Image 1 (tube, rainbow, N blue to C red):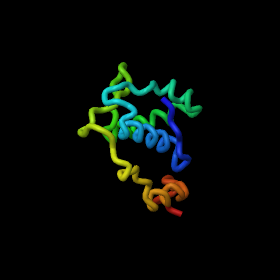
Image 2 (image 1 turned 135 degrees about the vertical axis):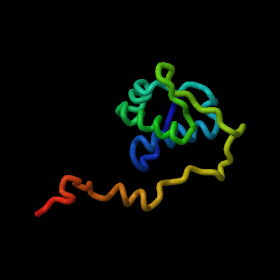
Image 3 (image 1 turned 45 degrees about the horizontal axis):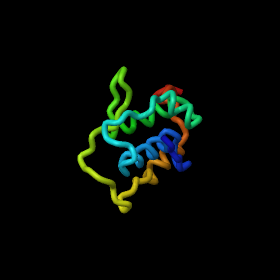
Amino acid sequence: MHLSLDKKGTLYDQIARAIRLEILEGRIAAESRLPSTRSLAIALGVSRKSVLQAYDLLCAEELAVARAGSGTRVAKLGFSGRVSKKIGIVPASRYALRARALPAIRLALWGAAG
């Protein structure tokens, strides 16, 4: 499987977008196995955690089904054929992008008497 990452957003978002596009355009058939997280991480030169997060995202979107011991498979989709080019992947909203740029909040400081 050859995936091209678009350099937009987090690494796991890029991986999930690339796999989602492959699924929706019919290049990965329904019920076929996705590569193992270890082999895909090695092929892409990324950490396994990034691939795990991408697979989790695809499972949450019901595009993939993960089963312990048997790997992750592409889910059966409710339509047949290819998706038209007019339907694209929705980019992250400006609010989501701004939230990522916010500094981390130190919860230990909240409610502290000073």
